[in-house]
Length: 84
Image 1: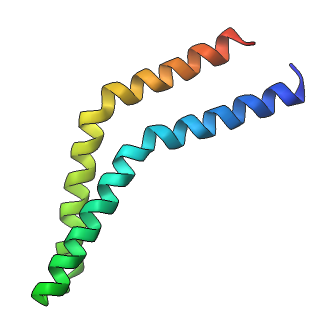
Image 2: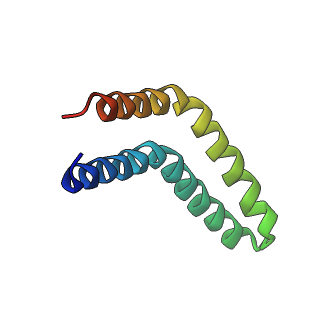
């Protein structure tokens, strides 16, 4: 296995990992922004009020997108094992 091939595998794995995590991260970003706006409008500035909804939404997004995530990672494994 050449160094170039190894670099290509690592690059592909990093991109696949980012793509797999993207739905959960986007949900966390959106819920965090909405929670921040609600906190600013209401004057409630407790950290736990912003943390709990984001945590619940991100966990729900992870559960909902888990089959897709597993399929993408299994596809990456198949491509890596099969080789060029």
